[in-house]
Amino acid sequence: MPDFTWETQSPLRKALVVGRHGAGTGAAGVTLREVRDIALVQVMARRGQAAATAKAAKKLFGVEPPTSPKAVTAKTATLIWSGADQFLAFAPHSGDEFYAKLADTFAGIASLSDQSDGRCALHISGPRARDAMAKFCALDLHDTVFPVGAAASTAIDHTNASVWRSADEAGEAVYNLLVFTSFSDSLWHMIADAALEYGLDAGHVSAVQ
Amino acid sequence: MRIACPFCGERDSSEFSYLGDASPKRPNFAVDSPNSPAEIEDAVFDYVYLRANVAGDMREYWYHGGGCRSWLIAERNTVTHEFKSVTAAPGAGAALAGQAGE
Image (tube, rainbow over all chains, first blue to last red; front, side):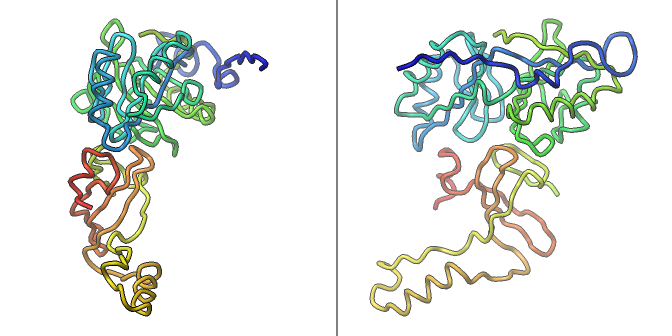
């Protein structure tokens, strides 16, 4: 059998222009990053296997997967609620062992779907991030309603997206978005447009846990 | 209009799709009409084609396609558009569907 080597390329290679855009010349109000080199697996418990799936996840990751719209950070991955009895396992790409480990752990009790190249991950941060997001996201992102660790599956610009909040080293809010790869170009333009009036710093980073 | 998804919380109605009346029950021949083919035919015709045009409280299916992708059963007043309850439909998440009792 021939061996194929697939070269991954960013779905945003046309849309993403690294640098400072929009209003002002000082610090940007919104920082937008594409997160590259991700591993993402959708885990859906089979009927009647929700408890067994949670137990297996705890054994593998050290934490229980969320049962309500939340994102739980473990040592090797972040588990993001994505629906009833289902979650996304998000981690930096580190070769095929990650997938093998998941396939082994959840064999027979949950269905897995590799979304590493199916979704595009974005970080939105900066002092005006929430103002920019208010233009396209109907979620209430106020600190008291959507704190660090909160997550949601919602529609952004008529497209499904997973959103969860984390924090950077300085403790400032980082809004994580997972959008369909094929729509990411359009969404990137839309998000950039929403951010231009606050000053936009665009770029890309590699995923880290 | 906002709809309170039992999984996600309150969301804009644009995230949901209406999927019709939740009341019709598929005829169970063994129980309902084991003897008469005419009864069976009538029951199937009702189940497939006939819908009540309710002015008032109605049980209906909704689908949260823009969010958690769950099927839901809502009790809605078709006159005032008030949602009285929204619960998980059978099969929508093992944990909550059990409570729906269907």
